[in-house]
Amino acid sequence: MFDGLAGDPHGRVLSAALVGEERLAEADSSCAIVAVTGQRVVPPNGQDRLPYDPDLIVAAAVDWARLAHRRAPDPSGLLGEEFTLSALQRLHEAVLQEPLFKDTFRRHVLDALEPTGRVSTGVVGRPAAMHRRR
Image 1 (cartoon, helix red, strand yellow):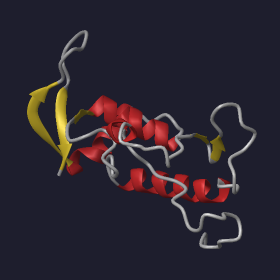
Image 2 (cartoon, helix red, strand yellow):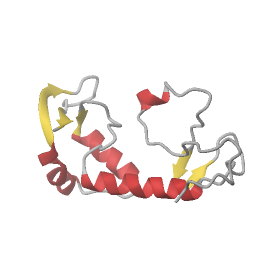
Image 3 (cartoon, one colour):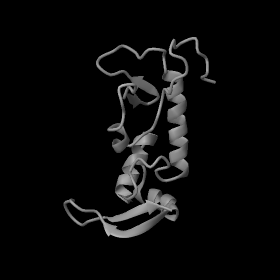
């Protein structure tokens, strides 16, 4: 679907990836980090567009990410090994671009999670229970 070489003189290149913060620090100069709004790329540094028009690839990646997050909690491990249910819900709301009801969301994901026995630290108020994917 995306394997045509006509648009890029460099050959085949990875155009889209869903990564967590810790992986962003590992990115080298061959990577361009861009924001995605809806299913459109927001080019960095005030550019009008990215070269080779990646919107079709980004739209497919966004569709994949949304489907994966509807099926499983944090399928790409963006939150790391342990996380709170609130952090997981915020991630899903960001990926899905829609608000989720707290009770419904938790019922949907709890069977795929296990409590770690630890609580969040460095928070104001009552610490939240930490979970991990099964």
